[in-house]
Length: 291
Image (cartoon, rainbow, N blue to C red; front, side):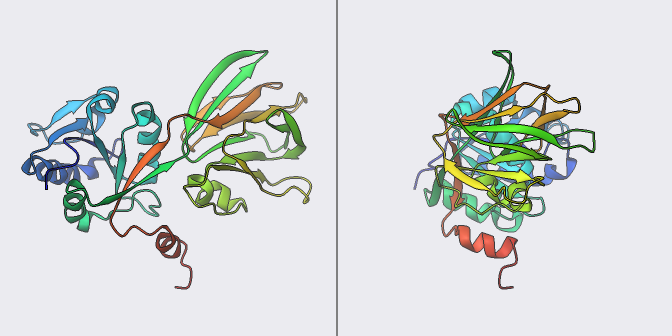
């Protein structure tokens, strides 16, 4: 059967020379299958001199690749998802990290699984991606995407922050806490889970809001529609010192009175899984359920 994907991009964990052998093995396998191979420019810097693959900046890779293969851990895939979402490039993950909820192919089976995927034997999922923007006195001061979560949290001081939370313009709560996590279903097994939130099936159109160490025990996690807009306002107090973190990787500063608006991005993240992929099996394995 002809290859389903013709041009493939390879993205390795940023700054990690340990990905080189895996990237080279993947590139050579793809070339033998008649595919065009593009290597992310930062990844290409990690490969030995004279490596035969074409290097491409991330934007060009997004414009030209039919599929991007991410070699690393979940953090590497989060980064790739944010940067490639505007191009709607599907992503496939090879796990060189630790837990690996998103990068679900092991290096030992990657060539076999990739061959099956190129032959059209795979599953595709569409997952929710968040867009967040920070407004100060009505002006947008910063923006970012998040595949796992957007976290409004205290910064550098051992004091709680006070926030107002609105859903679709209606007041939900006023809370003193260490912060608030707004998570996608994908991110429900990350920081939100550690803070006591529920696990959401990753294909749901929903967001979960999980308080971090709230001062009142009555505050509980809450699930809302993925079509909602969540707005968080940092109240003006003498000790407010907060910031926004997206996917644990991007930090955006906050001052008292800033408004953080979070909503679903129109483009979903497209994930490619091998045949036989079972999300519940991954949960059992990664969380040691019944082991």
